[in-house]
Image (cartoon, rainbow, N blue to C red; front, side):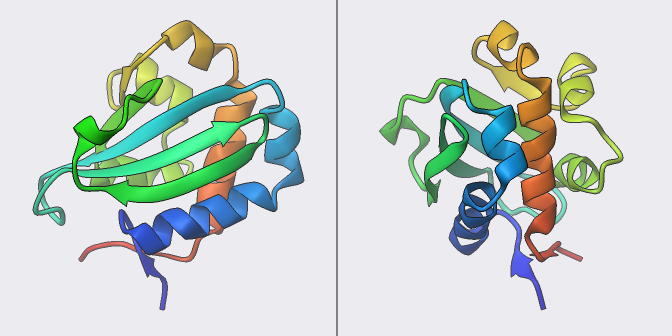
Length: 136
């Protein structure tokens, strides 16, 4: 049985996957910036959830769920409903294309993100390694 998506345990598993990925380390060696990955309320999600992920030069320094999003000032926010996150992790939606088409809503410096498409792809690859349990 997998780890329920958008939970603290899932965030920790993602951090472990990121930190054990040589491909991500190489692709994101120049990346600096922390994120809120926000899953918006809707079918399968009773309320918005905020996963904080601190990414720094190819490693994840921290990952956890945040109850109060004002508690951190992050460089980026990436927001989507759970069905879009699932499609991203099933490689049905490319994360950069998802941002460009508005399926994923980005708050932060878009040029910084667009300069690192390989890092985004490798981050998704890390997320795919997490045995994820999706809501029914």
